[in-house]
Image (cartoon, rainbow over all chains, first blue to last red; front, side, top):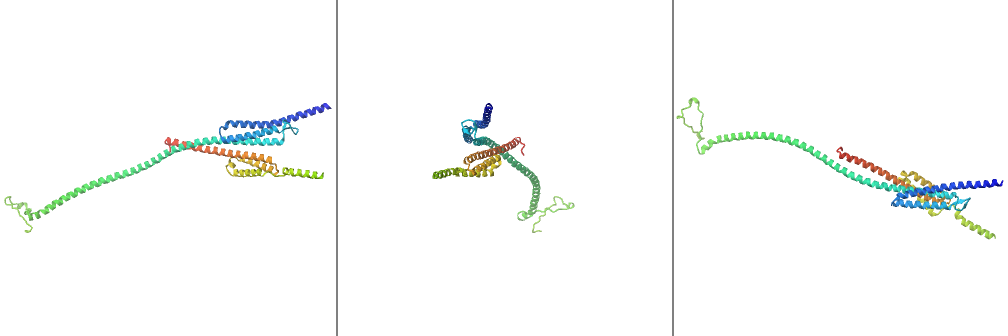
Length: 235
Length: 127
């Protein structure tokens, strides 16, 4: 009977120790995982101030959790530095670890944000360069359009010029013809004037000789022919 | 003897009152209020759009903090406040990150579009 009681008591101790160590391992595993996450992010932080601050914060909470985990070990409700964790301490540790996770997430986001910002800066520079080059092409295109419009106008003007030239040549020839006519008329007029003015001249200085037509039959011989002088007074 | 008994009881009551009272310190209340306002403001900003899950988690922590505050658990309240603060920071950072990524994608696509246009100009295909 005594032996059975002793075996039962031994079994109780063994099982409770297993249970407590399992509980302890769970929290320790969480702590280790958080520590590993913090160490992993520490390698990527570089000189990013925001991420460094977040990392420091995460480390301080990790330390708090670790200290609490060490402090809160108990066996059968007595703090003796080993055994399981107090339920309230476990909740607090979980809270700290959750804070660590959030702080690590914040650091990761800020690192990603910094990387994206750098990339954005590069892309914006490229974009500005491409836009400048496009503007050069567009300016050229606009200039070309303007030149094409000018060329079209020039063609119209050229056609008009051709028409004007044709008209000009036509008018020139007409003018020449008319000038010739005018000249001919002027000549005739001059001739007529001369002809008309001749007796007047003779009145003053020399006598005007008017040759009257004589019928052929009555034409006298050259010897008999005598010029008839007519003066305005005689008329 | 009776006098000592009364005095002892009075002392016990006097020292135990602040512990059992369902109140938290003024600074904790202020912190809680500030975080409430911050969470409200975040809900109306880009954070509500880009990091809703984290914001919801922060609000949940704030609710827990308020519940702790209502029962006078100062330490637990502070712990939940710290958690909520970290969650709000994380939500802010996540929102900024997502916004930045979105902006980057937009600018990248714009760059591709302009590069294609430039290429067309180069090849003389542009209208």
